Amino acid sequence: MPIYEYLCQDCRKRSSILVLNLCNPAPASCRHCGSSKVERLMSRFASPKSEEARLDSLADPSNLGGLDENDPQSVARFMKTMGKEMGEDLGDDVESMMEQAGDNGDRTDSTDSL
Image 1 (cartoon, helix red, strand yellow):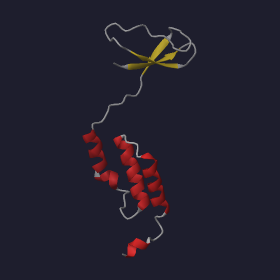
Image 2 (cartoon, helix red, strand yellow):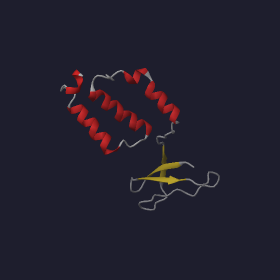
Image 3 (cartoon, rainbow, N blue to C red):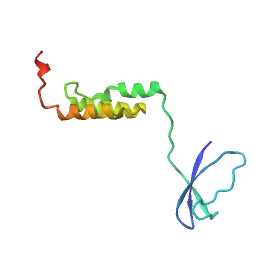
Image 4 (cartoon, helix red, strand yellow):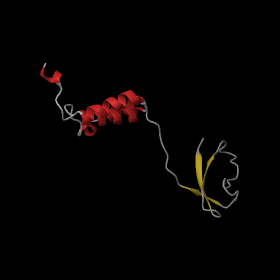
């Protein structure tokens, strides 16, 4: 079921209208002022990616160009990107750990010498 966008010729505001029946759509009207003088707009569309397509895009070598496994800030940025791409909320704990890793990236840890 598509959602169409319209621009009202009277109040110049946009309205989004969900079309439930393509064969017999209801006449479009402005949701703000009620005017029937509306013009259909071309709008962007989104197509959902499968989990496999998301993983493939993350594994694409061109997306790994800025990743340095020895730089905690770089790894933290990649983790945030990966979380956004997968649609996962990393949670406050993971976010704070990544920020701490970024803050401590230039300090040496006592466990490094072990």
